[in-house]
Image 1 (cartoon, one colour):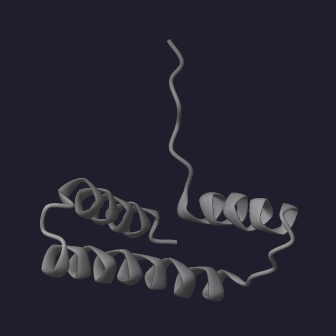
Image 2 (tube, rainbow, N blue to C red):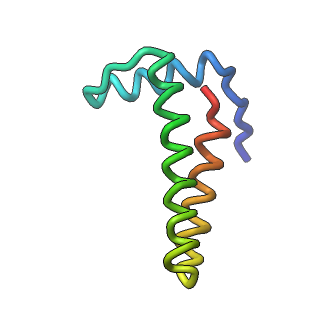
Length: 76
């Protein structure tokens, strides 16, 4: 069994910025924070839209809410 040690916020941010650069996306730490906040809000807006217009789409709604939570957890 492998035990993983959580990265510090700074280390996680550096890893994410490096991965983005590897794929041709340049961003500052502040820009990254803004993108994460925007992604969270977009997921929640879509979940609300589906809840209001397609309430039977509960799997999509749940997936969007979970994605929003993931962006909040990253909180970089």
